[in-house]
Length: 68
Image (cartoon, rainbow, N blue to C red; front, side, top):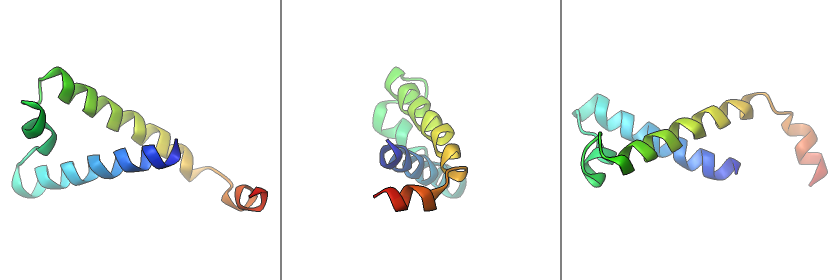
């Protein structure tokens, strides 16, 4: 789940970078506009992945590494 969340966060970051630098929304372009249902689903999944990624900041990675 962590890797999937990280991938979605990276996609979101790259998309926001494109918006900020070139005023180009890649997700909207691929899926038919920012109001298209699939675009809204992608935006929601990226947002949920961002919320999940917040939990990564507070995990004790030393304890997780020792269990492996």
